[in-house]
Amino acid sequence: MAKCDQGYLCEVCGEEVTSIVESDLYLRYVLGQLDAEKLHVSPERHLACNPVLAQYIDDDRFEPVTVDGEFDKRLLDPEYVARHTLRVSRAYRRLREIAASESPISLLEYPLKN
Image (cartoon, rainbow, N blue to C red; front, top):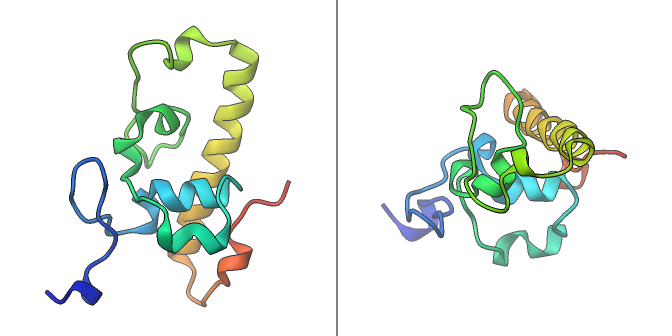
């Protein structure tokens, strides 16, 4: 496969991130944690390869992730965890909407509206 035909490679496992719905990079972009201008130079990871963020995804289509240690959401303030879970889960559903769209969506329309 030509390098230009290859998708983003996960900086953790080295495997290709084949879909936007498994992309930590695009989830962070949808959350507003990353500027559009930085997408092409930012490292990519599978969602499961970034468990600290992925543990907040609450969706039947996503295999739950747990974290051991000080970043385990079970050890954090329940109110913060609830708010963050709602926001990250909403961003994950947005990735699903983008992936399922039959018409192109502008990259600038990906992020969540507050």
